[in-house]
Amino acid sequence: MNFKQTFRTAHPIIGVVHLLPLPTSPRWGGSLKAVIDRAEQESLALASGGVNGIMVENFFDAPFTKGQVDPAVVSVMTLVIKKIMSLVNIPVGVNVLRNDARSAMAIAAATGAQFIRVNVLTGVMATDQGLIEGCAYELLRYRRELGCDVKILADVLVKHARPLGTPNLTTAVCDTIERGLADAIILSGWSTGSPPSIEDLELATAAAKGTPVLIGSGADWENISKLITAADGAIVSSSLKRQGKIEQSIDPIRVSQFVEAMRLSKQSQIADSELLPSSPDRILH
Image 1 (cartoon, rainbow, N blue to C red):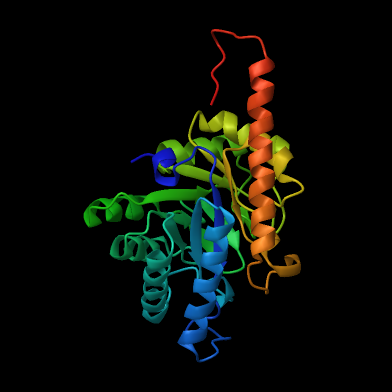
Image 2: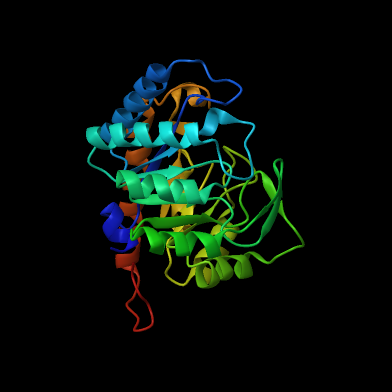
């Protein structure tokens, strides 16, 4: 199954559920029920608002490890994702922060989740957790061992990090796709809530040569019409929360607002493309 078939659209909106602090994290509140209840509520808000997929993250577990998370985190995330999948009929994915792609793949394989996000698939990034090295070699072999078809959505020059050296964005995109075998790439701004530039999105899309490019941060109902002209879809969270504040829960009204803005933007693009003169070299997506 390819990317478009997974999300049932070539231009998916993937809403993010930020789990409350999990067991062993510094801010763990002691109530698994509270974690599950909020995750279920946010998932229903996202699905009813019209998103095409949901990604579950242990976002409030900061500070993160650069290696494998505690087994309790894997266990709880597996439980929560299974519950979410029983409530919604859209694809569900997982991101185990900061870069525990192996655990994410295991959770997806066990639950039937369709995709994972990997912050550093190739290359080396300097982060607040230290140096994080790409995990493509181990991850791709592990996916084959598990016998699953979980899609890998990989960040390129991920936010909250700096690359060692000064790699060219085009080269980084090509390496992530051709050498890391990513199923889609993600481009973000420098931090959570910060959007990538149009110029960077255009460079990434050109380098990706048909592999989907997703906006990984900073998209909101006001800027999506501009950003989506240079991308295939968006992963969105902060702007969907009440008052746009990261610590708040998902606001169903903001979800519907974003989905409608995205729909109108795509309709406008299609209308504009139909007005252009046809050319044998021009391919419409």
